[in-house]
Amino acid sequence: MAVGVTAGPAGAAPQRSIISASYTGGPDTVTSFRCVPADTPATCHGTASGDATYAGGWTGTSHYEYRFVIAATGAYTVDIIERFEGIVAGCGNGTFVVRTHELIEPTGVAQGRWVIARGGTGDLLALTGTGSSAAVYAPDGTGDGTITGAVTCRP
Image (tube, rainbow, N blue to C red; front, top):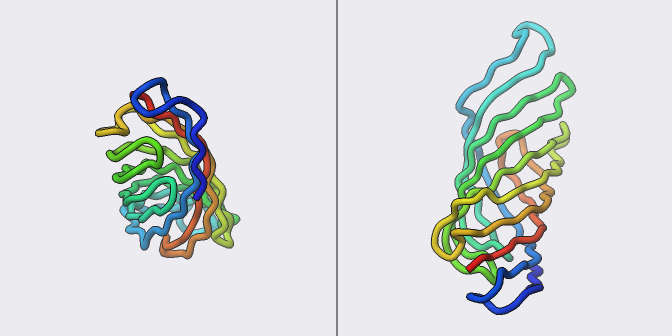
């Protein structure tokens, strides 16, 4: 875990922190799936959801839902909406929503970018941030990964 504060004390001016955390998630539940055309190698679309546990700069749990597209090559493009509940180092306790866009290779290796949406709760009410993610996933959605980036806590 890495956390570095680059602004004044909590309760004063906004604080910007460098965050690093690891996560474990899945298995995921597929809620819809279709391929077009259905009888040949095709592009497939679907939705799914699951839960994750975080440790490090973000410590807590989340529930996520996502849309995915699978190309005929077997690569996935995934858009995730995740509701995190827990502690963000240097910021406090509460909930927030993070949106992630991932590209997953047929091998399960994934790279992504994330952004925290406005509208958290508790100490994380006005939390903002952006960063990247890296993970490896199994076909059932189980996997392990890391997030890194910067968050800003606002009093």
